[in-house]
Length: 123
Image (tube, rainbow, N blue to C red; front, side, top):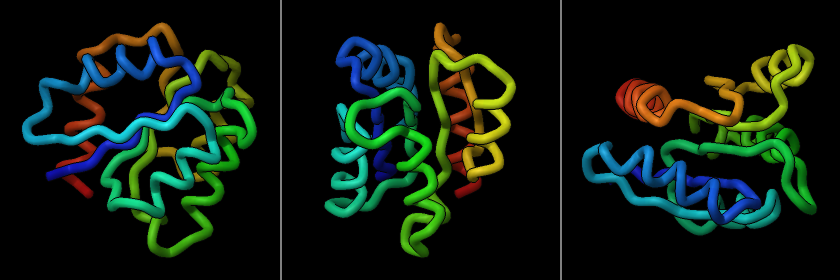
């Protein structure tokens, strides 16, 4: 059963992301409210997809992304960055750091679900 980690400091946004991905078959969700908690969750259980906000307390989402790419055990986990940062520099930085998809908020739930489905099928 695929395990999706939703890392966002907003409980409302985490609920919206999970609601958007409920249509995916047989998935389980882990939640993290900070970058540090996201890294801790990665160590506790296998994760097959990460939906990651950039603006989070303690450890920035970009640092979480760098962490996953530096460690062999996490390197192949696809990451969807879901953020309010719509500038091209942030997009380019996240994609070059290893994000598979970069989406700005507000987002289209059906598109997020389609991206997640595609990434889980190819992972």
